[in-house]
Image 1 (tube, helix red, strand yellow):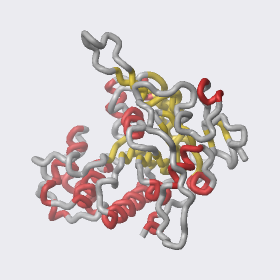
Image 2: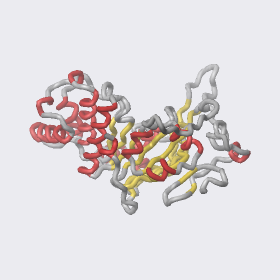
Image 3: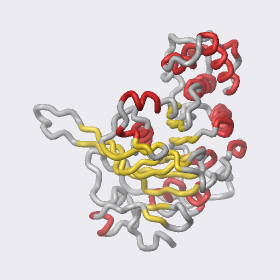
Image 4: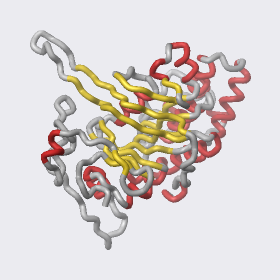
Length: 338
């Protein structure tokens, strides 16, 4: 049941673990004879985010809005174009290979597809122990004991050690992926659509497991998902992305009960209500999502926004505080804080 893994209230006084400042990741199209000036895709565009130790920050938005790119840019799995990523106050964007090598023990990722993220030629032991072998941690026997202990934590028996990925279900494969991500005892984990490829019943089991591991190991999650219902139940705070930019950030309860940005309101109106006698006032957005190669000027959402004015077409709105403490919205509407 969803209620089983509902997030506990986050401590607002918890220290900041990770912070991004003006983070950008731009991709340039292919240059050719007939395309001397290739277009630039602003996949992550000037993003400021703060994540506190021990919390789960949910990151939502339509497919292609830059959620996964943001997560991978934070981890430096892909190089950033500009900006800062501060981890416990230190700018890891400036780290050389040696420093980043050590930092990767603290920062891990759980990938979306449990079918393609595991090497089919490696056994469970080889997959989960790979990070230990890379960092030279423990002898072969010690590594085996650590892997067995880790598998036990994620609900898998030691009898699976010498089996291959194709012998497991999707849920079991994702448990192996979680074990591999946590074997180095990281502090920060990016969960990139970690349950979207799983059946609903299996999804609940994996989410329960992730919440259990977070509590046991004091983990901090950046939980990326397009499933608003799942994000509501696992997150402490939620950030909403649109076309490479963050348009709203708020505590879970505040965002789902009092969304301020028109895009957030439209997203939440699409969540199904499991009650035939209740109806939600669905907000239907006009037009298609603009091309990332040629985003609109000013507010990127103004081409689909029912409240757009002249200022929205020319000026980029900045995140500003509204409502409860910590609620930030990027919108020019004068009544946004009412």
